[in-house]
Image (cartoon, rainbow, N blue to C red; front, side, top):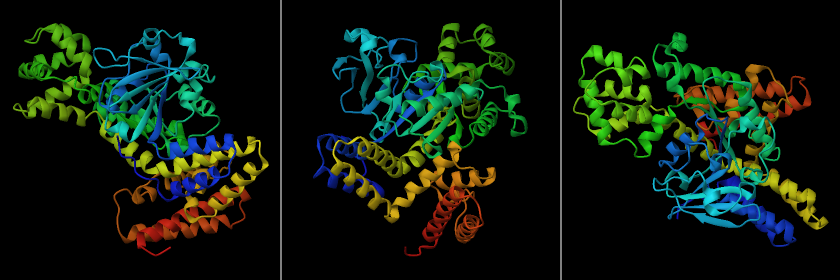
Length: 497
């Protein structure tokens, strides 16, 4: 069984509240408290969202490290699939009435594209698929692969698939080449389908998953490489999405999937060596376009070249040829590692585990308190309603609850409920959604006294802004940002709280 870290201070406070409520709660509230406790101690649940054919399942496979998510159109690509950790691989078709019907993985180890049919369950009766997979990443994150939300035209997820997604605590949103209104719609649809639980900027990371298909000329001043074009496009989409997301990262999804799932073989490496050994003119012709790659005469047969395109695309082939040209003795394992390094997946994983997972405490606590508040509003017992209200009020007075105030302030800013000048909004979001002190201060890589000086300076500035006669809602947000800067200054100077 995986080891899940114990909740941090805020999570422990929510845990204590739930256990206190359990001792005297009625059956309905007790069930809610039990669910909240289970989720507090479970891995962070990340929904992978995006439009149809954006590359969601390919990215899921790369993250999990196994080709388990079906990428071809089929029954299961129209369903929610939850990937969780387990020591024995299996797939359950979960029905709307809670039944589970197990089906075997395919011979290739993937979720069957026709899993409901194999289980003898009509698609209309399926809630979602539950795939239990052995994977290091799944020991820390539960991945929820969703249908193409853009195809829903801003309507909620069909039927009870809503229930399978509603538990997501963070979002990995997959973009295609250009930022479009449909991508904003997809995030709005996710918000609708999670019962109005706005993901917020601290819990949404976006990925440009087909960065290798961009025209290098699109990079402009950034350079002329394909990767530079991907970075430029990601930056443009970051601006288009605004404060809805932490960041937009470029990634070559197919290359990442091939390298991480064991699809890259010594046979592929040998074929790439032969391509590298061709004369410079032939190599240039082969790498000029997909059509020329499979039609120019060379020592690698056409079928093998088509296989390379299916696994690496032309960008990956070009990267491999450059790597082998620089080091002809490179082993297949080292070549795979070199290709993975240029896929961009390392940074996506770093952000997922270093930003989203590091914020698990506040993300889970926020979701838990919202769940408890909803339960209190609908509880049949006045005693239950009072107990929840009093317990939450007491918890919010604790020092650790400031993290909840930061999360609430970010939601107010990004939803438009409270407006500040653009530069102040960007600063507040950066301060509240990052975990690294340098990044929070806008000084990535910085260390020492300059950081502490800036933190104290900005704390004072925001306090002054809060008392400068701005609207009450703006003042409340400003006080939260002031407090965040002050607490960071204390952290940087090791001043006891």
